[in-house]
Length: 88
Image 1 (cartoon, rainbow, N blue to C red):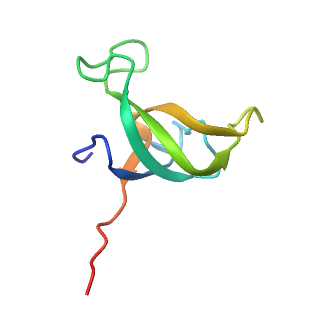
Image 2 (image 1 turned 90 degrees about the vertical axis):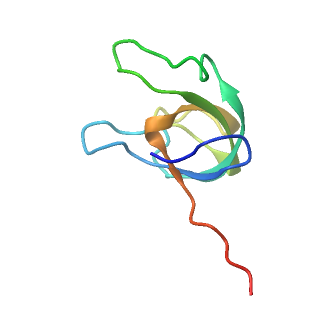
């Protein structure tokens, strides 16, 4: 996990081989705001973690074939920070 927050560029991917992300194309996007109870943490059957609203770089369909969506709420466990851009 990294330092997620508004403005972070992220990739959405599977958390593990048994915990598949709802976005099979593994899209990229940017975090635009905290989601749900992101600041307080969310605990339930799926464990704890924060939620973030991610605006995709391109519209995406979910694993059920619904969509395309331009932004969605994503559990932090499915997010990976994009590498920093180094300018010359």
